[in-house]
Length: 152
Image (cartoon, rainbow, N blue to C red; front, side):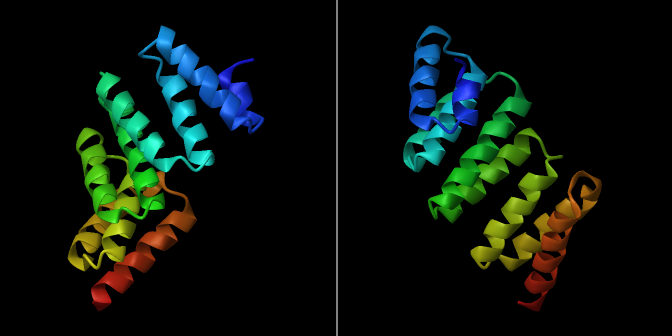
């Protein structure tokens, strides 16, 4: 059974084990890293998942994959209530791929929570530049953050 199948069946411990076995043979298997990280996240092992993100980022030679793992790392840091670190990670992801509208929106959300209202407003402007890449609910969130940031 593949790690994709194990993950879909919510067998996260089995998926983690198979991903680790795969990674001992194939260090650069980014799919195995992705499923390992997501399994660890579902198991509540956020610190371990962040460490695996860091390893995957180092192994990636492609900037779009690096941006993807940096984005994932940021989401995990938010879940761990480490908003300042998440903000840094989102910025690093955007340096690799500045066209990621969802990353701009999540960065704006972190900045808002950290009371960095001017930075939040700038990030929302970047979201709005990429509006066609976001669903309408996300655009609603961006406009809400913009209006709330301007009030502060």
